[in-house]
Length: 242
Length: 238
Image (cartoon, rainbow over all chains, first blue to last red; front, top):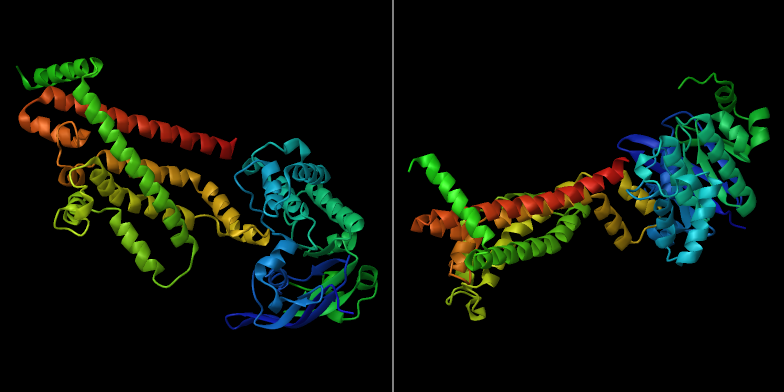
């Protein structure tokens, strides 16, 4: 049976620099996977390829058995939610920032209101609902961008370092929301993080990426207690200088 | 009467003319407003979407088109007037429309001037938007029309500037409307062309009165649009 999300021989170069080298991986439905690794090893590029913001030089991504080559980028993006490291909010209220995602999908107003308010409550943004999103702190803005991606119940949620540089309060709200969404809705989630403690806290599986190659991919307990590759062990112990 | 007293006297008589609701001045003012507001609206209606498309799409010759639009922002009004005159004159290709020396001809001439202003400023404003905005909209699966509406909303401060600049150019312009309107009394006399006419005739009271009205209109419209801009800015920062 085909995996929920399958990456088959994905390669990507920027100029002469190879960012991803024939990367293969498969993700199951309901997974919460953390992709860890040093900076500049291709983690963000991989997420961007999965969200079709970039195309690979070679290789194929298949989502629920359908190869990307047979789907339009727009069709893929409608089904996937993506949260960037540096959130960009629109010049509108917090409510409208989140509601846009449902308006894009033609959701009726009563249902729209209920779904937006529910996701705002989950991310503890309900008291800020009417405030201009441009006046929010970095952590609040990131919670808005997560709410915006979660509100339409994406089939796959991608997060690129969503808690980098955030304070523990915001990190905790975001992590709790991600885990609840994965537990309650079985939302398949891939989070890129350089924080191995975060991976340990929230992920079910962990993938270690180094120099554009997938070095190790296993269940979280196994990844941290008995890594197979010495490079993984070195990264976990903090010996890897990057 | 000394030079300074002469000016003050003219100014006082001009205020009397304005306050008495002189019908000639009212007619000239209303025509000026009708022509310039219509030309500004038409320039914005066509110029803003065109500028948006030029800014958002990648195509061969984009730099060349942008340069042409930017150059056209400084089009000499008399040259525009000459071209429109030749087009609308009885021997021109659009002569059959019989629009020469009508307010419609004046609107056409001013629209040619306001279009590149609205278009050029829109290109610059939209191109300077944070590129991550567009990427965020794409990743959220926004349909094209929503993407355009949100990006235009994000550019609204700059778009108001485009409209202010286009209106300022239109209301203060004299060369083009003089050529295609002919400055016919009670029919195609605008504020600027009338100021020229009455100055040449030595009727300085009327010329000053029209000048004051022209400045008041320019100030009033700019004040309104600037307040709109400030409101938008306050929303961003509060």
